[in-house]
Image 1: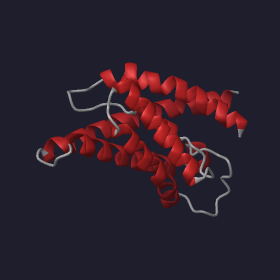
Image 2 (image 1 turned 180 degrees about the horizontal axis):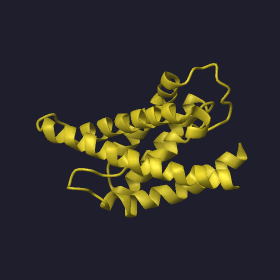
Image 3 (image 1 turned 180 degrees about the vertical axis):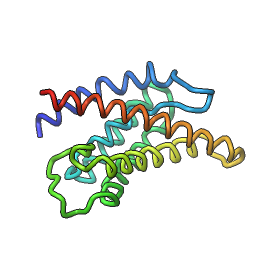
Image 4 (image 1 turned 90 degrees about the vertical axis):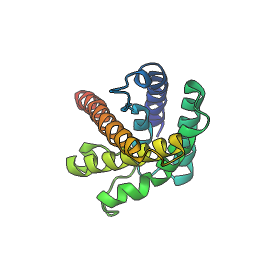
Length: 172
């Protein structure tokens, strides 16, 4: 577990500032924002307790709120996402599989199940984030465009990040 804690701390120290400094400014067509930092919640081990994963999700969101000056939006969305992580995981992988201590990845879950899992997690976060951010359904069309575009952009960025990390893990 210490090996995972060190890896998680390094990812935290890299992804949160990268999200605040780089990715928040990589806006496509004034609608799509890559939310790469949610990889910190997606990569948590399945066997991690709900209380601990929810606390970690809240801390990730709170840290990003401090960096980005978004009063509680990311904290709320990350807390909900980390709470929904285990039920979403069990939608695509049976509970009988032996995944003790492993993080979800294409290697542990299978390619198709992992892609569905990651896409579902990204959609949950984007729907929650843009609905809370807008705090209205007045311009519903723009809300749907932002959710769809940001979800696709985030999914592609997370897929690329996961491919880089899995390839590196296989080399070592």
